[in-house]
Length: 89
Image 1 (cartoon, helix red, strand yellow):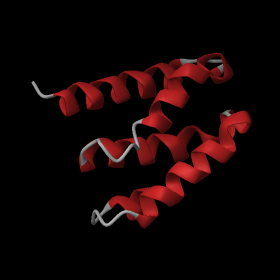
Image 2 (tube, helix red, strand yellow; image 1 turned 120 degrees about the vertical axis):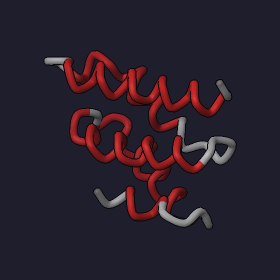
Image 3 (cartoon, one colour; image 1 turned 30 degrees about the vertical axis):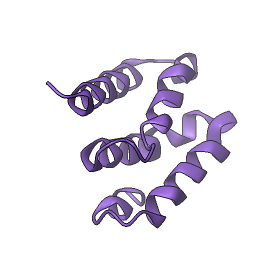
Image 4 (cartoon, helix red, strand yellow; image 1 turned 180 degrees about the vertical axis):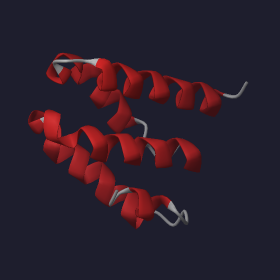
């Protein structure tokens, strides 16, 4: 298993915890980790999943809105095909 695959599994875990949480604001660390997964060192699949999760849970983390928007813009500017499509979902 590669480091990227572990990253994807972690993202799925963060997303699942956020989906199940009644008070999503208690999971700021998970959302911050999702945002960090957009880092240029991660592979395209990790970035795509992170983009989906960022937009899905954006409304619950207003204190991280600047960071989330910046990460989405960075993904739109990346040359990897297919990433920018996930930032608008």
